Length: 263
Image 1 (cartoon, rainbow, N blue to C red):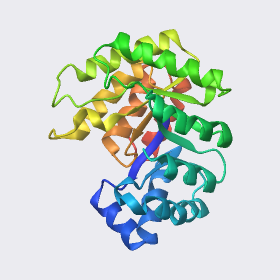
Image 2: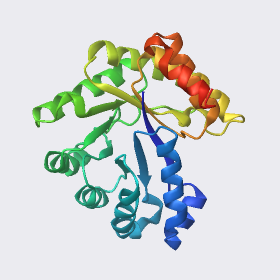
Image 3: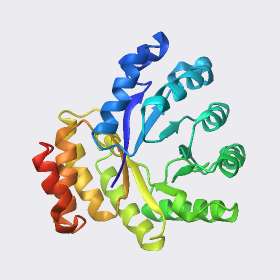
């Protein structure tokens, strides 16, 4: 399971304030805690800084990379900020994210070809959010074919079927799971990913919803998740679900997690 640590997001008030004040100690502590908890990537979102986003990335990325041994996920809807982030990043970053809108594709695909990051591609295009798993699969196939024609390696692609909150639509989680299963069945060579915590937005006891949803998503074929690796209930669910689904040979990871107090 590939974990992308979600805590360095400027939509969180403490992170936004730390970015504004250039509080290096806070930002490094948030990043290092996630790495120590098992994150394979650290997601960095500075979009809430608006006009200062590019400037913020210029000092934040080198700061984090001096201490981290895992790469960053550069999370921005701004092509200029994405280009600057990929240019500065040392090694292979994760691009978060590419959607199916033609304008977005034209601005981002050249960056992917030049800097060769891993790529999260969303199941969304000019028509907005898909209303069925068939639509999600169709967009996923279109995006993978497009990237493959541009010379992007399949192993560098993550498909995100988009998690929506069950607080607004009680069928949202079911739609995601159905879409996930169809994508894995039709394109088993491509990895899948999800912003898992979106499912519980606006609800009480979010950790319970998130951890249960993670177990269901693992069974449906989820390869990676953008989550809070410091959420002990969520991480315990991850290890136990992998053990139950036969994805943990000799139960090595589960037993190690228990010894380390993670389960």
